[in-house]
Length: 285
Length: 286
Image (tube, rainbow over all chains, first blue to last red; front, side):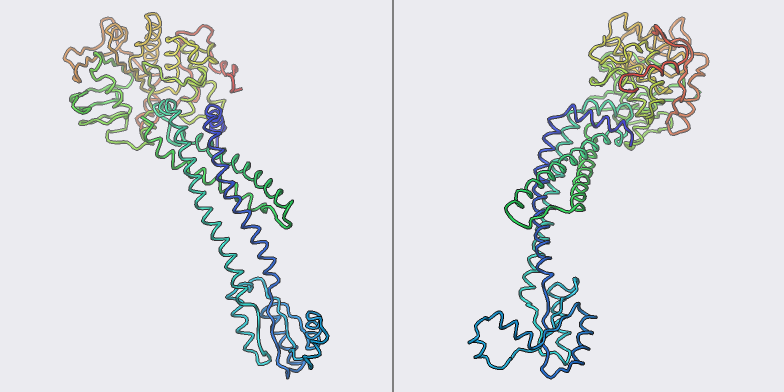
């Protein structure tokens, strides 16, 4: 890219400060809106991951299972599903007693009715409702297993919540992307029309559409970068304000920020290309 | 000699009005051709057909190797880059200096490096005697100076053909004489010159065929070189460019080292070697 085009873009920005400022403000508003949703989605994902990491499957063993059978089962479950910890009948009773707390009530229960169990912390790829259901079905098939519990309904709700956030973010992203293209398309159209005289002269001198268009495209991309950076600054301020009152609110990761600016620039390029391919045909002699 | 522009039975209609009616003519390489006619005779329509701003309603317009028909936008741009065009109303960029107005034509031709642009522009400005005003803006110039900037812009890429649309129309007599002297000189150096005018004295001041247009038709009174005038004997200086014009689909190969022979007609302190002018870097280009 020749410095000439950059100089031309800067000249245009200087000469049409009002239009450029309007475009940057409109883009900043649109990008901040989508950025807010990204921030919400990211924080929701962090929270869901935190909760999801605690998801585990409890495998209740039959009373007649020997130590050797249990060790063999632990090995197989570890290989197939994740980390396994053994909770004996006595441990289960102690845990229960601690939770209940009332000795009289415990005496009323009499003999320890609780089964020994294995607690399986599932691998990350199994932390979703369909995978957990399938894992539970497979574990249930082992002869040593009395029952399997993993909170199917709760896991399903958690998954739905995560999916909802993702879909909302995509929908919001599409709407805002269209808004950005619309804003830039019309701003560039106005800028080209404001410089109609210049475009006509260049066209008469033999300038190709590419020669005329490049400074305008650079201008649009520059406006998008500035708007994206202002949006990120505003989002950071919002995140700090929320974090002050609400523990655990985090800002967007670096990769998300880079993708955010990159997407804004790509949209600016798309809008500029679309606008100029139409406008130059109507302006050039 | 090769034809650089040919019109074959060209008509152009605008609604009910017939602006050109079955006009045929041709122009040779290095020739000077003047179209004389009143307002509305079809002169500007003729120029717009050459530059493909408009298409003929009937007939064929051939410019170099562009043999009529509708050109793509890219081809049309290429065609225009092979022509130097001078307008009555100058068509200068008001927000740019004299230097930048001329330099834009060089950049459009595909030259971006300062060591390519600066010497070319400075030499063209010296040719028209405006190198001292390279930093001025159009609103700071007289009409005559503006037209000289437009001429510098038209010749800076060494085109084989220069089109001039009433180039003295907005000028008082002295400036008009200067501009005609300059155009005559450019033609003497080998460029084909096609000029349209309403003024008999302008036609008489140029050494070429005069074709008269009236109501969109060529008149029989068309005559060849005016008394005492002769066509240039050997347009050697630009023949190479004209050859490129023929061989490269109309695309000229501008001189990398612009060295037109002779002293610039308006130069006051023009250096003999155009390279010397490159040492005077224009504002914003150093």
